[in-house]
Each structure stands twice: as C-alpha cells, then as structure tokens.
Length: 209
Image (cartoon, rainbow, N blue to C red; front, side, top):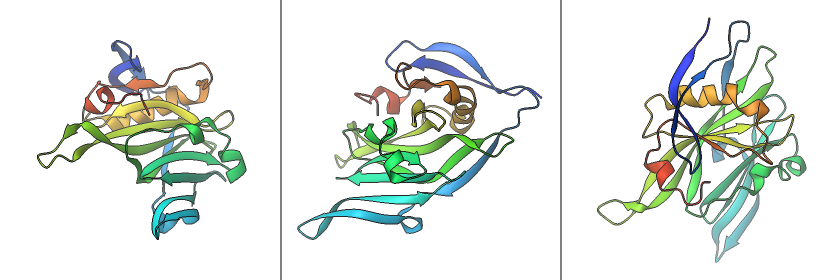
C-alpha cells in the first residue's frame, strides 16, 4: 500500500516549492512509539543555581533502542540530543544547536522505526517565545513547531521543521519527513528542511533553531 502526504517542501530561507512527500512503498512498515522527557520522568543533574534560584540543569530520559535523551536547559532555553551515553550525546551536532529566544521541548516525543524496531528518527514538539508577536499584555506568544531529528548511525541532528499552526496535518508531515529524509540526511552539508506551509513559527525565526 502506498501512502502520501501532500505538502510543501523548501529549504529554510528559500522560496517554497510545492511537492508531494510519499511514504515508502509496501513491505517497509513504519511504526511510532512514544516516550516522555518530562522532568518528573527523567533524572536531573548538573543543576546550576543563582541566588538560590535554578538557572540551568540537565536531565537524562529513557528513550528507545538503548538510546537516552539528554535535555540541557539554561536560562529557559533548551537543547535536545540523543545517545547511548552522555559523552556520546554531548558530541552530536544537536547538542550544540542553540536558539536565542526562550524555548522548550514538549513532554512527549515520538520515535520512528522500521520492522526491525530500531529507531532512525525522532519527532519532538518544540515551542519558542515569538518576540515579534505579542498578546494584549505585551507577553510574547508561543510559536509551535515539530522538529524532526535523525538518529545514528551517523550524527544526531535536526533535519526538518513543521509549523504546527500553519499545517493541520503537521503530525503526518513530520512522520513522512522522518521516513523520507532522516536516514540519508548529511548534517555537514544538507540544510534543515521546512516541510509544509511557511506560517508564523517559521517566518519569525531568525535565525532558525
């Protein structure tokens, strides 16, 4: 059975190009499994306090396929990386991919794997403070994206963004991007792809996360 997700596909900062993202053909079944990266479900370490107030901390969370998820938070800004050990995970490109505005990852992450059960991509909900789009009280609105990461073998890095406000089928687009792009993505040369419509969460990023 062939499945398709209609959408738009463009490199970040480039013109949007209409395209169709097709699922892999019959015989290559994909599945999604879910784990939590909520603080209550993880082990916190390297806590930094300023004047008895927590300024930053790291946490390690159980993942899939012997992988662990490491979240580093500093001054209300988070990075996410994956590895079998913290030493390995801290060397991945994802561990050094920072974003300037306040931001955080949502509690539940999605793992994409094939028939062998080994995950090859991760999908995470991610939000940042859109300082150019404020509510009536002057507080920044929250811009919401789905971020697709590739997993080993090869570097752990971001491969695609999907604007959740602009795309009603954001989950399906993210899964298709994970299945079609992640495994062959070259973090050293390929640009992170924008999948779907260029809504406010994409247009207000400067630079992309």
